[in-house]
Image (cartoon, rainbow, N blue to C red; front, top):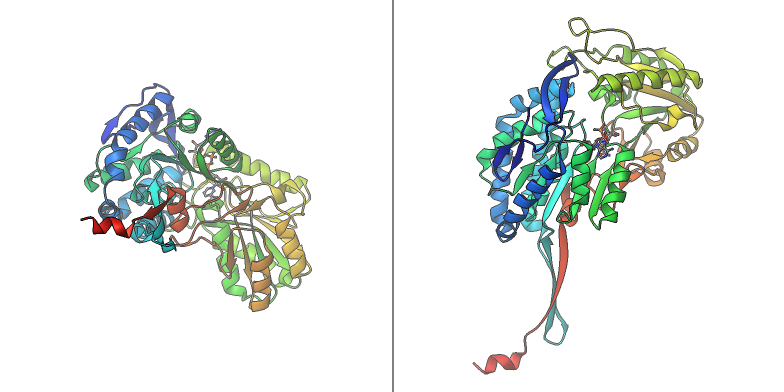
Length: 487
Ligand code: NAD
């Protein structure tokens, strides 16, 4: 059974209930994680509170020294971390290693926090009066992570929060708790003061305890839209600062002038990478005008050529989906697509992977002619399913994209600068790709999200994270010149 990391020590949960951690490629239980209790959270908050004052008073330039060590440890142990990630999440080893890189990038950007915390200063706002603004930490903060990026997502928040002077609690997904547990074990060598960085395992009860704890002023959340909305509402009702990233249904628009081979390759990678379980995965491919005859068959062919298998097998281009329930839900949604009038050009169901017959595999699937307004158009499938749609013009495509509920990302493939410019200007989504399949912002940009993909104001990463994890204080000072003359 995994343990929590509280006050620099590994401690058992105060509860006895547990949840199985399953390797989705084999269907075998590989670990058990505590279901979590409010007492576990109370202990972690107490430890983080005890550490808060000294940590807040540690200069930012000293705080980031710990981050430099984190980066080094992540780099040195990337292979080991990636293998654990692949075995509990199902993604390929290459995808897991790419996650380590994204985590490291966030640590690197957070190392610039002494500069990002620099203040604004106005001299002589009135005669002899100066005014300036400083940013100070909030106290004990936390993040709640989803299953699909076990390594990267806590690093969208944690390095920024602690470099800004907060103490912190990470709550990994109960489906993939082993990766972050190993990272915390490795981070013991970082030598952070006890209580600065804590980890509590668990599921809904743990999340609720964080949302209700009066000494936790800010929480970052990433997960499905229903839970993101719930976390935002419950957290803000309790007076907390909340940033909650939700689900997605990312459209990709293909203009007839797009380069055929690169576009097909990039879209297939976007749809089927991480078995479609990426919040920026292309889900609906909208072919404009003649793009239908140019791209449709090639996209199906590219999907057919993807190999599915155990993520540690170098031949596997795509792994399984996360759970049996998830597999069944995706299979049901494929049926629903057909019931709603789409045709199944490629059916990835019911094809066991040799040697991994108990794994939760679905091979690439293509639903053709998905119609606007159907559930297949609106629902996040979060699996390896491409929905093809057809429109006559770019205007129609933009209208179609904007009619969806989500706004995580939208991409366009074209040679036309003016089409791309129109698209990026008019489309209602937080991350826009132009000839890019997965429009993931680098760590020095905020990770935006609109509509049902995000609840809150400030986003993950970069200066948004710095603003989220600090509060401003404006100081107005007057030093009378004549006082000087007395001494
Ligand atoms: P999830 O919502 O089921 O779980 C996310 C977290 O919330 C977990 O830590 C879980 O323990 C907790 N949780 C689950 N149910 C809860 C409840 N009823 N009350 C309180 N807490 C609860 O999400 P998931 O399945 O782990 O992750 C996949 C989802 O995350 C997809 O919808 C995906 O689009 C989304 N996602 C979004 C982004 C983004 O940047 N917008 C990034 C990654 C994933």
